[in-house]
Length: 365
Ligand code: HEM
Ligand SMILES: *[C@@H]1O[C@H](CO)[C@@H](O)[C@H](O)[C@H]1NC(C)=O
Ligand SMILES: *[C@@H]1O[C@H](CO)[C@@H](O)[C@H](O)[C@H]1NC(C)=O
Ligand SMILES: *[C@@H]1O[C@H](CO)[C@@H](O)[C@H](O)[C@H]1NC(C)=O
Ligand SMILES: CC(=O)N[C@H]1CO[C@H](CO)[C@@H](O)[C@@H]1O
Image 1 (cartoon, rainbow, N blue to C red):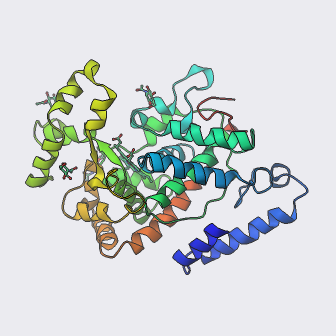
Image 2 (tube, rainbow, N blue to C red; image 1 turned 180 degrees about the horizontal axis):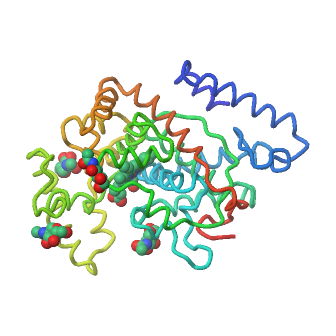
Image 3 (spheres, helix red, strand yellow; image 1 turned 90 degrees about the vertical axis):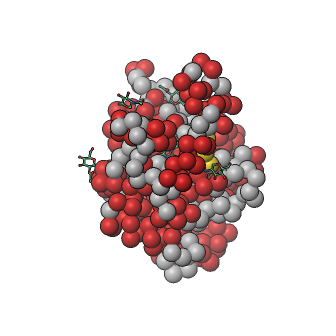
């Protein structure tokens, strides 16, 4: 209720209908308190789905995400990216978290776009605390949705309401992840097409990519852009000279030789090759105040880090949206981001692969 009150203040006009929905659905659950949500609700989701079966679930996720974030601000971007990769492949079903698959097959974590995902340990940490309070009740899919939402809020992003009651997947989808997750090498038409295939409009796509205003990106994703763009042996011609020099400087030296000598690449070396996105989450900055529109501002100046980011300036529709999001104090972007995160968090997958909550998110039950 506290969260809803907060929401009222932030989005009084735009999200009012949802608040009413949230209130009426939670009071429905309360009035049918004699039966568990599972019995009364089939596989329907609702606000505070665990209000009877694990009343503290959402609070536990909130508190444990906060303490993880206090110790490591990278928690927020890591969880947000994990959520994207989970929901984009067969819906938000926790399938991205699996380290093993049916019949010993490869997992989403093995797929090329997923190889740099981080934060699995953080989900495990949160889930363990939830399991202690309510064994076998809360799905990994819900833990990820709730924790990612908390992370966005902790970096200064908007709060948005999410339903709970998602089912965990009974398998992981390696091939789908390979085929459907967008690549940093995609041009704007391919990016828009990938998102359209999941029901996102160009406007929603541009707002969702604003997630790149927090977190960090490894130089591995930039090096081909600055050294050998599309196999030309030259840098991406769309990068302004001063920015090219900055990128080359920040991604040069030890990190480059480290890249070629895989065996000599320690985790410290990897960390030193990471460029903060516009210094957004530098541990030196006060936490909780970094979510903003600098991503769009950078694109306007040709200073997007990924090729696919900068591509948003090569289509009239998306350029206009970038300009609009960069043009105010962040209100428009945050409002749209809240909406699109609700949509992302409610993507659903194949009913046939739905199972009970996994006890350990990386393992099949
Ligand atoms: C065209 C679509 C997208 C592409 C090609 C893309 C690609 C990437 C790449 C290559 C990285 C760097 C990973 C690393 O260095 O380890 C990254 C980071 C990130 N992405 Fe995306 N992404 C896309 C869309 C999204 C969306 C829709 C979201 C969330 C709603 C998202 C959230 C993030 C976050 C938060 C990070 C920073 C992660 C961290 O600091 O640990 N991305 N993305
Ligand atoms: C974008 O990439 C796709 C696939 O590589 C290609 O077919 C298309 O022509 C490209 N579009 C533009 C505008 O460059
Ligand atoms: C650039 O990439 C192309 C294609 O991947 C490769 O054949 C070429 O050797 C590379 N050039 C340099 C200078 O690395
Ligand atoms: C490159 O490094 C400098 C100095 O640390 C920093 O100020 C700048 O923001 C970095 N540039 C990028 C694109 O990360
Ligand atoms: C093939 C490969 O590199 N798989 C990796 C995918 O990501 C997970 C989690 O980061 C790694 O453990 C795998 O080795």
